[in-house]
Length: 64
Image 1 (tube, rainbow, N blue to C red):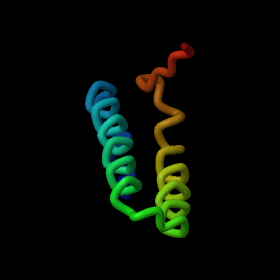
Image 2: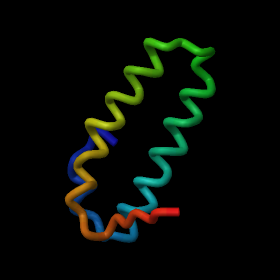
Image 3: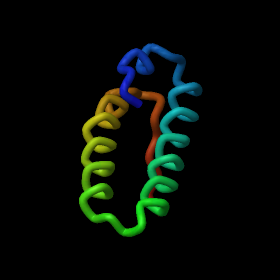
Image 4: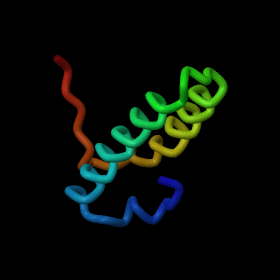
């Protein structure tokens, strides 16, 4: 997630990367033993780094 060159990958690779980052973050949060500071740091870092993907036309969002 910390490597910004991922935005140079094809869209279908970025999508898989994006989805798996979220799975890893969820796992880390569940494993954190409710450490609120750690959870806040993880979420803050994730939001900051994932904003790179917002400019990609290959990432789609759906409303349900």
